[in-house]
Length: 248
Ligand SMILES: NC(=O)c1ccc[n+]([C@@H]2O[C@H](COP(=O)([O-])OP(=O)(O)OC[C@H]3O[C@@H](n4cnc5c(N)ncnc54)[C@H](O)[C@@H]3O)[C@@H](O)[C@H]2O)c1
Image 1 (cartoon, rainbow, N blue to C red):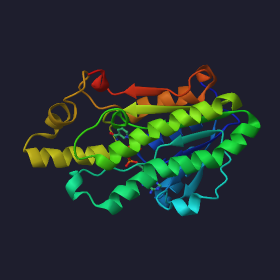
Image 2: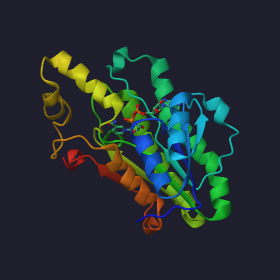
Image 3: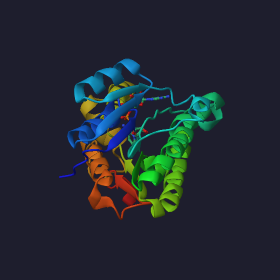
Image 4: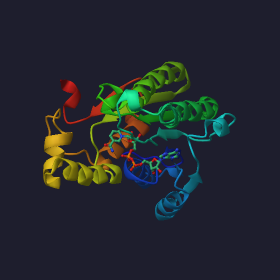
């Protein structure tokens, strides 16, 4: 079992879904966890539950992150958002916002954390990408572009950090059962005129060999492993957890 006593972890988007499951798993392994989220109330309440700290931060405000110094041994870049629209209708401002939150902010947080990690000779950068970091779907231009960019950023971080005891990896899940996706299920059922039970196999999992959603705790277990000692030689990798979607 991974032990992280004495390690400090920052989890962005840690107030909900995958990020919350990661924060819980890291805290249970003994890490001191900071939940960084734009939803300050949810971050504070989650932090209180797991005995960590909350950091209310809007990661789309990248100018405010330019001079940041981040004291952390483990950084989980997880905050994200989705928007589905054809490119010719996609608002440039929304594209820019999504790229800021899911690519520029991870760059700025990594940049802010690396000097301390290099000094201590230890660091774990874990980037929550997506199957859309390695595969495209129509109508998700900003999301797919940001996640593909995150995969590249993670590999560069791995190459630069290797000599300093810093690893960097991506996790690339398919659809995960989070509040956001559960809301989508209800909406999809309505739009398609089918039962909610049918949305997962018939709409969301057409590409997957395993016809179910990923659970947040399954993603968190991989985060935990990547943060621990057994993953010392794992860097520059991208771990899919997509039920076989990307095997096609
Ligand atoms: N749910 C899925 O199916 C799925 C699949 C693959 C990858 N992912 C990725 O996992 C990550 C987490 O997604 P989730 O499904 O848990 O979503 P979620 O909506 O449950 O949680 C996202 C969190 O990010 C926070 N956030 C959003 N914008 C922010 C900002 N500007 N600044 C700070 N925090 C902000 C939200 O407040 C929220 O707490 C995302 O990067 C997403 O792309 C999700």
